[in-house]
Image (tube, rainbow, N blue to C red; front, top):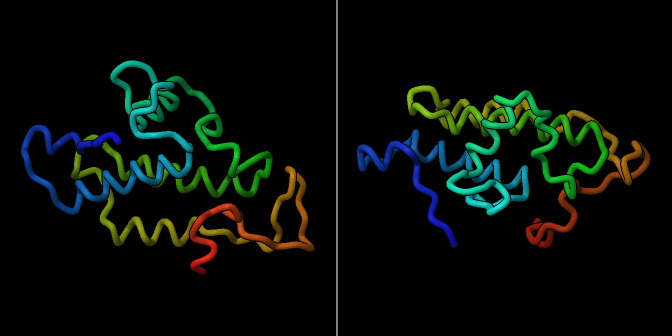
Length: 143
């Protein structure tokens, strides 16, 4: 298991709401990409935040970063994941003052929730059947 430290903690030894928001952004990135914070696929000394930032700097499609086992070829799901990815990017801003408050994060996540009635199966819209996107999640049994 890896310990992922917020950048400013290394300099100031202080943690607070903005540090928690950074950590929350890292968790969002893990969920969206299916990658660990320090995945060997990123390369030496590159973490998940820098990996996503490099994709942005290199004008790479952010869809490449998404976990395709969740999104598949369903454009609706990919769009929702991209909205949450943008929130994660805001949460992991380098400067704490540039990160949103948790209240703002909650508002943004609420606005990013699904607005559709249909769900994709094998990349095809299927409005007649609905099932949870994360149907293989261990928390499904708790709901």
